[in-house]
Amino acid sequence: MHETIWVLNGPNLNLLGEREPDIYGRETLKDVENILREQAFQQEVSISFFQKNGEGELVTLIQEARLKAHGLLINPGAYSHYSLAVYDALRAVSIPKVEVHISKVLKREQERRHLLTAAACDGLIAGFGTWGYSLGLNALVKLIRGGK
Ligand code: DQA
Image (cartoon, rainbow, N blue to C red; front, side, top):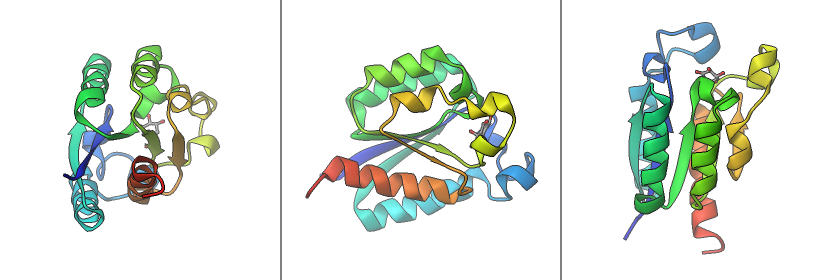
């Protein structure tokens, strides 16, 4: 059976492609999903793709992932910088987790340079545009399969 990877996207990422394209690019979230689905097929993993604006909705999905997924790729959006609830949920889930940011958060406003939820993940990818999702999926497959 194929391993399952959940891809969770936080607030405002539904507007990818039209929202601040100079920062986030012109690709839509659907484009990202299509690219990941193709990659998942090649790497023989299954993916489920979600986007939620609410903090509680994200927490519920993270909790659910612990029972239904082998790995978690997450872009918590603005919650990344301050949500203790998302941080706690991630800590409670012991499957491999990678956080991704499209933009170069470490080069942006002071508030965005602080990354709280990433500290609960196995790795962080930031600043490579939407390609970061593919890099994150790759990393997760490696983490899940280990030496296999
Ligand atoms: C983001 C960076 C966050 O600071 C911002 O609030 C987002 C997107 C990124 O992918 O670059 O919504 O997570």
